[in-house]
Image (cartoon, rainbow, N blue to C red):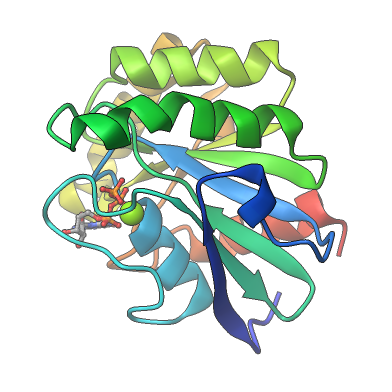
Amino acid sequence: IVVKKAEYTASAVKYEQYPTDGLPEIAMAGRSNVGKSSLINSFLGRRNLARTGNTPGKTQTLNFYRVNDAWFLVDLPGYGYAKVAKTVNAQWGPMMENYLKKREQLRAVIQIVDIRHAPSVEDREMHEWLRVKQVPTMVVATKADKIARGQWLKHLKVIAKDLEIPDVSLILPFSSQSGVGKKELNEAIEEILGI
Ligand code: GTP
Ligand code: MG
């Protein structure tokens, strides 16, 4: 995929607010602050299209980015961060569940974890939930620039074991900072979309 055009089109909490063009979608799920929005920017080659930040809880709605007028990347709000406002926390569950359960044009979820850490309870629950609901899921281990390349495999093995992924090679090491894994992610998305 060569990204020729990338634009933010909508933020949504409820189904009625989702885009209605019927284009296929790929959504990003992961813990708050793990780097979902950064991955979107890196993939799209746009520095600041999706808002990122040092404070967890930056993305609090479903944000839709249309790529090449052909498909959407959907930035989902992160999980596992207790300090966001109570009202936001209360709407998180239904907001995510409604989207992930009902969205017909959802082709796959990219679940993003931090390569440095063992998956959290929420990471494991999300992965299991996606498996049970039979949502095609790819796991990306981001912030790979933060550890030496020689350490990657050791970390990927822990992630594979905890998420019950049969083969470490199914997990993609990635860095929004260095661009490692970008080509492989691009190819994976091409395959998901069949383009
Ligand atoms: P929420 O919207 O709060 O759920 O967070 P998010 O998952 O969208 O994270 P975001 O992209 O805002 O990134 C959080 C922080 O991690 C920012 O300070 C980013 O600069 C940093 N970050 C994200 N990806 C990487 C990466 O690959 N390498 C490094 N070194 N830092 C990263
Ligand atoms: Mg975000």
